[in-house]
Amino acid sequence: MDILIIGGSGLISTAIGQQLVDAGHRLSCFNRAKTPNRITGKVEIIPGDRHDRAAFEDVLAKRGFDVVVDMIAFSPDDVASTLRAVGGRCGQLIHCSTVCVYSGPVTQIPTTETEPFHSVGGYGRNKILCEQLLMREFSDKKLPVTIMRPSHSYGEVSGFLRPFGPGHTLVARMRAGRPIIMNDGGNSVWASCHVEDVARGFIGTMGNTKTIGQTYNVCGSENMTWNQYMEQIAEVVGGKYLPVHIPTEVLKQVATPWVGGTWEIFAWPSIFDSSKLKRDAGWKGQTISWKEGVRRTMDWQAAHGGFVAADAEPFEDTLISAWHAQIAGLPTMPAGK
Image (cartoon, rainbow, N blue to C red):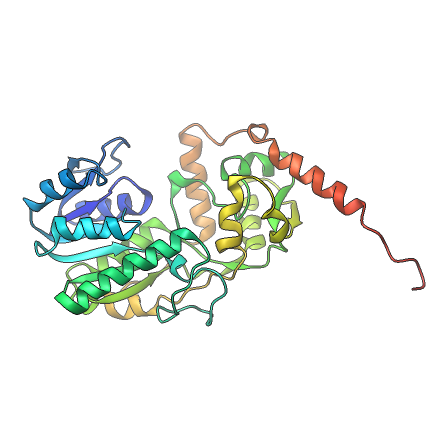
């Protein structure tokens, strides 16, 4: 197949691209060419900025593709531009959305694609508008669209995600025996999925007529609490997980960019059902365990400069000290009461 990825340098898109090239497909990537291409093998880079709408649409309007994968459409305006650029000239348009279209409290766990739209954050609300526009085009004009909803997709290059706090100092803190802030009790349930597995889910929908007009969760199935997630990291890296549990409602008051996803996403159970993708696209689901993914990440990071020192982000220690001071001042009930 002749395939275009709009993007192509990010975690998921690099994994998709590499697997497509390895399988012998013809691959082109449209991006700003500012991030080094990590796909090995033959790939055409079409340089450009998708927000230069006229140039983006003009260059792609001259081409035709069997499949177009839009990894970087974050607003309805982005989607409308993609439709002008490739609409009618591709056999299938795959849009990368997100499970954040139903962030916050859900009506069903595991959460399926039938969950009503709701998002407590702007990212998810914009993705809802993107999906709605695409599905109107499918309904009204038979646009051959497929929508993919990944959750936490990670790879060796990404390091480790935290529900609060900087991931790049996490390993150093664990190895030094320094405490780690964890929102609430750390018992909210979570699942991560390695990008190699996620990429296989995307590829299974390509050229697959069963997936036209459909939406799919493409998520991990190794469900664990955030405490378990951190404990496995500590085990692999040879450190300790020493949590300081602070309520999300308190962290929301902290003026730091670390807090956004904490109350929008990470304070809630995030367990998603991907059985529809397995049924329609033959996806095998998660094959790389979290612990194996941590090992791979550590090996990659060790070969590329290692992790950042704990002291690079002193605010975490400042916040922990302030929290301990506050709870030390709480009153206690007299004995016998």
